[in-house]
Length: 226
Image (tube, rainbow, N blue to C red; front, side, top):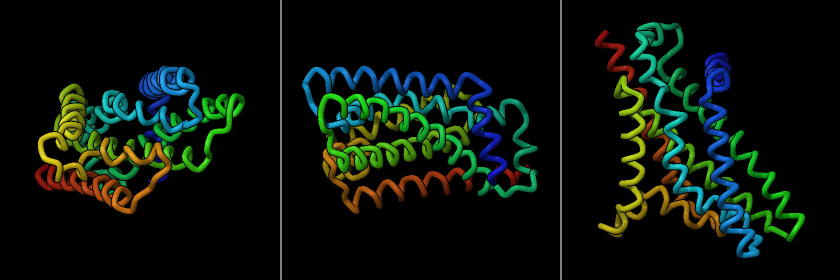
């Protein structure tokens, strides 16, 4: 699986995808660093991620929409499904590769943290909790985006499905408050305040595992049909 991860991570940087994602991510963080922290003279570094969580909805598909749809479109899916590697290892490798790109992007945000340290004293615990929450949110988005990519050969459709699903989760609590626990954005709200709840961790982990398993099932079924 490690070989697949290396290959996938390398592919992100051999194409514009990795650079575009990281560039947009940092541009987003720069804007929110100025609007939410500098302008209000705040030392809560987590505010960057609080605002950035909404924009993340629209840039995660850059990483995920081509994962499996491109394989189907280019006719290389058969090679993927018949390779000696198990479907589970392939899916996990692709998921972890996208997660690595996301982590690299997130680590770059520490530059803003060091700038903030020069002007004030940001709370380290709150910063670490915010980083953890944002990572869990990103991994949840990646898992669904990967699933969307596995059910269609069109990258654009995969991207639209991903964005549409995320936007739907934004508004679910407004229609029925009991659905608040299934809103990824809602679950993230406490992290920028330095608050971690077991419920949030379990729900994020469950969401990630669910869509990884669904992706594996989709590919296993397609493999059995071919």
